[in-house]
Length: 126
Image (cartoon, rainbow, N blue to C red; front, top):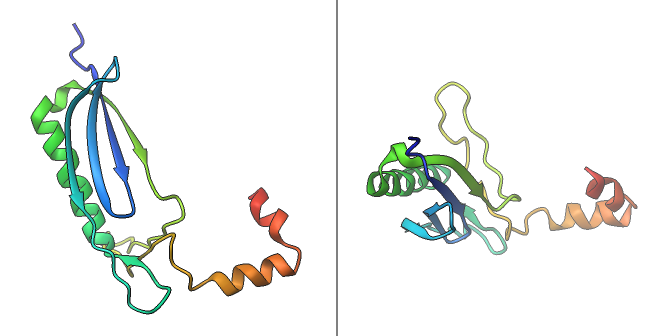
């Protein structure tokens, strides 16, 4: 008999990381969460420490896996902030800079210029 009967869902949010194990009927079997530190280095800028995101994600996933038994996890689903960007060093896996959060406004002028130049449809098509 296959014991894998849970789906682990990781929710990478703006203010926290959460991991939840659901059974196949959608009931919560276990959950864990950790807050994320938001950094505001300048007005209009919003960043996260990318290493903190990874560490807290791993901690939450490991906590849930330990609570339910890792062998019961059938699959993993991830939801994230799609617009947040992180660049990682390919040699050692460390983040090259802070994660730029979707709320960050430092590229607002570039976006406005692209829109004014008629490129909005082409950008959205990508």
